[in-house]
Amino acid sequence: MVFDGHSDLLYDVTRRRMLGENRVLERCHRAQLLRGGVEGLVLSLWTSGTPETFWKETDCRTAAQRTARMMACAQAELAECQDWLVVVRTAREAERARAAGRQYAFLGIEGMEAIGADLSGIDRYAGWGARLGMLTWNEENFLATGVWGDSLRGLTALGKRAVHRMRQRGMVVDVSHLNDRSFQDVALGADGVVIASHSNCRRLCSVPRNLTDDQLRFIRDTGGVVGLNVHHAFVHEEAQKQTAEMLARHAAHMADVMGVEHVACGFDFCQYMGPGNEGVEGMENASQIKNLFYWLERMGMHSQELQMIARDNFLRVLA
Ligand SMILES: [Zn+2]
Image 1 (tube, rainbow, N blue to C red):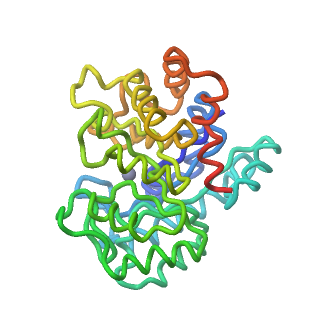
Image 2 (cartoon, protein in one colour):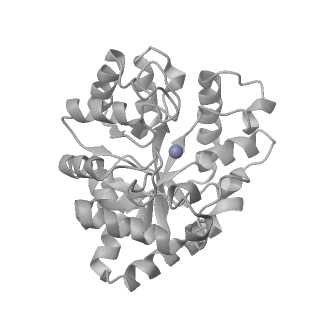
């Protein structure tokens, strides 16, 4: 079974519910999740938005408005699927859901642009149920700078306090999307677990969203995990090498650098967002997750290592 540490399905939930649909997860996504062996996942609140998203057709102009709308849609949606999908906050609650034959979801925050300079927003995220949080998406905001921002800018003084506040509220600090300077600032001030929920290796695919070997080792030293991301452009620069096999090579490299106990899944399947969001060949949607493990097995990993990558490592961090 698999725990997927990063999913933007709430984006599809919100888009469809605003068109009048309901039971979106059950009707449109559940079958693929089951076929892929997904026992649980992290549902992230991504509201930074870019011009090409559905938000431009709506009356939600600011990240704060989009956040309020997405939280409301998520709440209504998750209430409708309680009979098969349970929102949890701890690994123990996740285990209980699994034992009862249900899937489970942790909640996460992908970018905190919406709270502006008001750190009480972190309390609201935690109150909504978020267990993981990223300070930025790709943008620069009051807290930190993401990969699209100025490379000389990192965590702000407020951002440092935000990290502390997250830890007080039981939220795991997730550095996927931070630029290198912000990563370094988090690293220097780190006094707890740091994860990168959905990032690959820069050694194999040199894009800013991926991590250097030093960054991988830093995450290892905090006891954190790095989740493998299927997004084609984060797996290889050349289109013909954007494959499930190549993604498995990222996993093998992470295991070499950090040890297999720090390698996890954060697939970020986004095929429902349309062109430009494709996963790699053989990992195009959640139903194909077994292909990754086929390649890992062929590379010589044994079943215990596969299970650590598939679920155990990430759940250990959320315990
Ligand atoms: Zn992301």
